[in-house]
Image 1 (cartoon, one colour):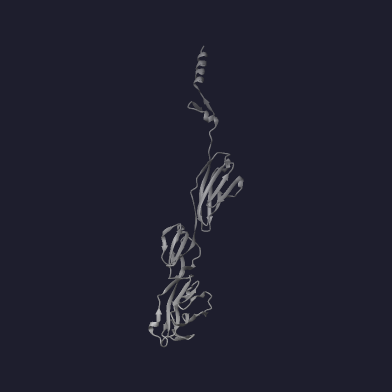
Image 2: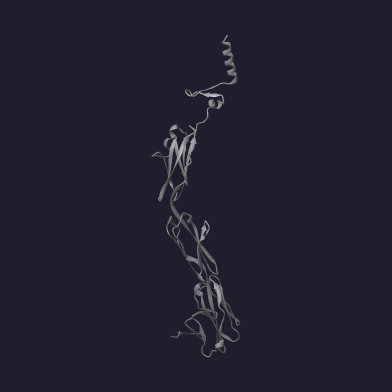
Length: 350
């Protein structure tokens, strides 16, 4: 079936347009009177200026967009406020369209009626659209070992190229050159910020997705602590977990609570601290720190042991000291004492 033909009779100009908007010859018109200009490419949002030369003996003029009349001479037929007349004289007929959109793409025709015959000048307008990401995966929270799929869809003209990469922490090995990024059996080390990029010849659009990976706690080995009786002692516990772990402290099988027997428990993120302000004999022993989140738990043991400070008597002991095993006291024989003992024994003989 042939394309239907629409006839426009405008102020004495009789011109035919097929459905696609391409001009065909009107009655009595030669093929040479129809001029096809090179395509015009313009970006969305810019201003389009269309101009045609009129020449001598022009009686009527009109600008048309496909089958719609934009201007007939000075008379505006279009209801679009973006369309306006720039110049109309014997030599030039120019209109403009502000803030060009994709709907403005297509065939435009300048129709001129001279005293002898009509002629047309046509041009095809191509509107380029910068890329825009229109559908992006939301921020995700998943458990370690899950399969993750990130999706990114974008519009634009020319059609944009889409790519994924791990932005923070940066990892060039984890990327994709299409709309979908698949991460099977995700580990905690794949948590971070992922960036989707949509680009064409016009511009680039980027958006990010934050991926959080939950995993159970792991606790660093506890370090035993030695404290002198009556001094301040601190036991510390560190746990790596997402979400952050809650901490519990135990002495043997008994849980310790904050303020219990003058003990303070302070939690700050990945750390927990158990403080003794005045260590007593009863405080020495084995303590257990337990880190817990919704995915599991882990623990470590820490020993609080006594450090015995040297006394003044033990500091005075030297190489000649003799330790009394019963009393724990020391008798020190200096060279002067030995001389006195020998002298007394000599005198007692007489």
